Length: 186
Image 1: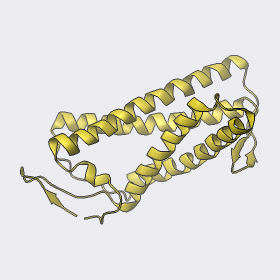
Image 2 (image 1 turned 30 degrees about the horizontal axis):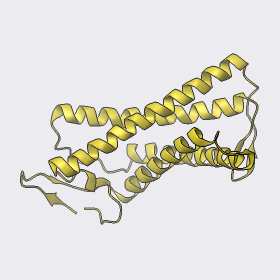
Image 3 (image 1 turned 90 degrees about the vertical axis):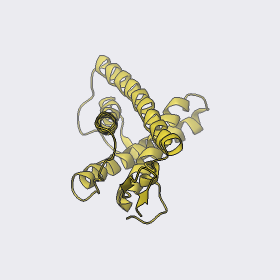
């Protein structure tokens, strides 16, 4: 679907797979963050379920990110951008930084878990570490990076979401509608 604003800006929507991968990524990143920040609160059975859910969601996010990057580099729709040059640089910078931070977070998660000699769990199926245990100092460093990187992702993703709302509600340029599900592409 193509929209025109009073300034005669015309744009297309993203393709279906790009939209689905975007919102699945957003949901899983938020789920991962909330689980990790809250799993110290409940007692052991619930805590364990939260950790296993975090691990399973992490593996799913890994697969989604691989598909997302491949799709973006091959068949994903690259829309003409009507933003001012500085706004375009900022938008692309945030997008690529989020991709890099999420991919780094995934790698750090695997390294932390497997480096500690613990298997990954995917719906209860245990995936053993493919390498030897790391030293304790290395594990602490990886855990710290994993934690700080998660906060960076949440802060940047929140800014990304607020920028989309600013475009939709203040600038009224329909930028957010490019990525909303449930509408036909154009």
